[in-house]
Structures are given as C-alpha cells and as structure tokens.
Amino acid sequence: MEVFKVRDLSLIDTGESYIVIAVDSFGGIGPKECDVVKLPVGKWGRAILRVPIMEVIASGAEPILVIDALGVEYDPMGKEVIIAIREELSRLGYKDIPITGSTEDNVPVKSSAAGVVVIGEASKGKFYPGTSKEGDNLFVVGIPKVGKEIKEDLLEDQEIPDILDLILLRGLIGVHDILPVGSRGILYEAYEMAKNSHLNLILLDNVSIDLRKSAGPSTCFLVSTSLTKREIMG
Image (cartoon, rainbow, N blue to C red; front, side, top):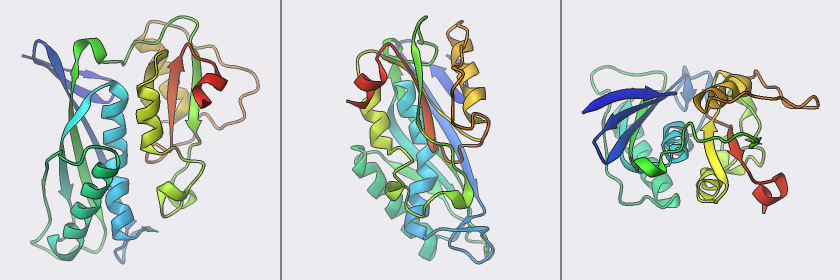
C-alpha cells in the first residue's frame, strides 16, 4: 500500500482507488474573547469545514469521514460546532458521513482553534489533479479575501463561491482540474496546476484580480477547462 502526496493532499493507493486526505487549521477566529476576528459559533463550524472538504471534492473524491480536532471545550462550544458541521454536510448532500474528533476539556480556552481532516475516496479514473489539457482556459471563481474582509456568513457574501458551485462544476463534462486557492494566492496555485499537468501557464495582460493575495479559507478556486466563460456560467 503506497502513501504519497499530490499538492496539499495525502493519498493512499488501495489498488483500485485512492483514499484522499485533506487537512486544514483554523485559529484566532471565532466567538471567544481573545479571537482576533469575531465569528459566531455556528458560522465558525461551517467555516472550519470549508477548505478540506473543498479540496477533497475538487480532486474528484467522495467525502467519507470528517475528523474535527477542536481546541475548545465540548460544552457548550464544541457541541454547537459539531451540530453546525453536521448541518453543513447535510446542505452539501453528505448527511450520512460520520464525524469523529476531540475537544479540549482540561484547561480553560480563551481563543478558538481547530484542525479539521476530511477523508474521501476516488476511483483512479476519477481523480482529477494533473488532468489539465493543452489549450485549456483557466478561470478564477470568486475573489481572494482574508480575515475581516469576509462577511460573517460565507453564504451571504456574493463574491465568495458556495461549495455547491464547486460541486456543480466538478460534474460538468469539459471541466478538468479544480484547485481551491489558499494562503499562497492564485498565481502560486495556477503554476502548480500547470506543473502537475506538465504544461506552461500563459497569463493574460489584463488580469484585474490580485494574483498574489491570500484567499484565506479558499474564497476562490481555479478551474481548468475546455469550456468558455459563457458555458461555465451557464
């Protein structure tokens, strides 16, 4: 059984499929007194799931398990966070996925923190990193935002794509690689996407978006596709 990495994903080759593992950390944002950016607990629960589940879905894998390592007490915050994670999974169509994890109940906690792991499984014919093709268009969906630039409720920020948008695009014929953007920015991830497919990246001269800015909790993602912008937007 081989274990290896593809971009930020860890993979286990089972022979017929890949077990795909994505992880993200979240700290200093939340409802506690020492958090730098204030966020209600229910919205915090949704936010901590966003990056790892986007990475798994973008790869072509189906999520099968969520692990939450919560650096907060179980009662009341941890309990509410688990409910929020379950509600978000249900909204995305994954209501039966098991959730496991742990909370910090030994010492008082004054700042919110969490590590979240999402595990998925992909058949080898439907694992998409590195599948960009020569001549593909590369689109950015959303814009990079971080910290206080992001609205409390991600679903209310019209400049940030919903995870459901990613799920929809992942199912379109003609869409090849999808890559959520994080703290390293669009340009870094775009070059990574091209490199994974042994291609060169050609940038347009009139790009108006900040290509180097952190996208925080994946407030945008890249799509390589043979489709046009009009076809992508429906």
